[in-house]
Length: 219
Image (cartoon, rainbow, N blue to C red):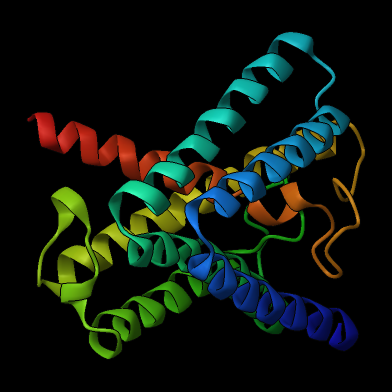
């Protein structure tokens, strides 16, 4: 467990450094990077989904998800982009740490490694991250769109909901991997497997945020 945890922790640190570099990149480089990630994600998706109709729907969903990432990064706010990424990362890290340290009842048969302790741990880590983000990085620099507010409670509710969505995304990918008896979608990232293993939650968080923003804006 210790070596696996260290790999996972180091991978998360490297990813955070890469995210910081990405935030500094010109938009053209970011678009190229997204295109490369779309190709890799589509290749990995094909490995875990055998039904062609579901696979084509998956391709469409992946493309829409990446377009939502591009929209938030380029047209809305880079701090929001970072905030949403951190929700997904802390959800994944919190679930792993609390799940391994506490253990306890399993959350679902879809993903046997996930526990109720991990589920709660994900939310705890996301709450801590949100508090730090708002008060240490100044909330007025975070453009939350229709959710834009100085209220820590509104931002926490949004963070908790998106963390829940991130976990659902993780479970959906886990379901398809389990169906095809595949542990990881790839081995690009040590401790995490493939790109899809790492961004499964993110693929759901970004479009969900935009969808919520659109619905509340039209009400």
